[in-house]
Image (tube, rainbow, N blue to C red; front, side, top):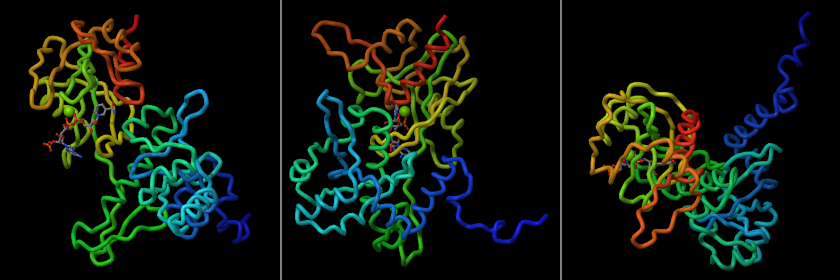
Length: 337
Ligand SMILES: NC(=O)C1=CN([C@@H]2O[C@H](COP(=O)(O)OP(=O)(O)OC[C@H]3O[C@@H](n4cnc5c(N)ncnc54)[C@H](OP(=O)(O)O)[C@@H]3O)[C@@H](O)[C@H]2O)C=CC1
Ligand SMILES: [Mg+2]
């Protein structure tokens, strides 16, 4: 029996019985695409403050760092209190949406005197390179996503084709040049990060810029037109002179340093009869095969070890905020007897 027309074309997407995740993603997309929906969401959203790309952190009594979500009214009060135009709120950029369907925005108040804002908020603006490791999940990735979006807007003010100013939409999900018609979207650079194994050992490398003693999985940016697999094989051949035999995907991560990368993490194996490392000293300072025992010891080290005079340098690996740590942990777990 045909349903009456109105039910078939009901447009109130929020009342449909979608899973809460689906309705949240659809709501987030509406905020992204529709300026009016975004302006409404901004009035009742969570606002995360930055100052010249440094996120505002607050420390609890027990010393834990938090990434405070201010309410729109609070932020307007702060702006008014400091004699600033409340219209600055419109510079907020949409980051995400909470499970309670609350929109999350970031706002850079870098034009205002830093300590004046810190005093009113009871917090401190801390450079992301430090803040990222002071925060825990899910605040660290939220802060790096907000910073990456704000930095993208600050570095894409002009059209790269006409030099004319670009104009953002309310959510900040894009910028458009009205004379060339080009639409710009926030970008991440794809990077493949690989844990190479010969079945018994794993291969880790270090750049001269790494902290002393720290070795990590090998990583490399994708060249234009490459598949992930091609990047992986090329980078391992380039950096340590080995040929990969098999590849297994592990996971991915947005990595904000130095620019926004999308880290695609994989395990790879090489022929155990051909494990001779031929190091590209232009790229890496060192690369070595490590045993399970050495890696298990390194995984126990949670903070950068002190270098004591006359003592051998201690081998350690990136902290668990970095996806390299996940790859190394996965490898150790699968080898563990
Ligand atoms: N989250 C994690 O666990 C880890 C993250 N990383 C990150 O992975 C990224 C890549 O690692 P890395 O070994 O340095 O990469 P590569 O091995 O590709 O070497 C870096 C070189 O790539 C070129 N390059 C820089 N930026 C880009 C870009 N956006 N697109 C294409 N090529 C680029 C530069 O070459 P040129 O100088 O010739 O221009 C640079 O010297 C780094 O940003 C690093 O921070 C690395 C290890 C662990
Ligand atoms: Mg590399």
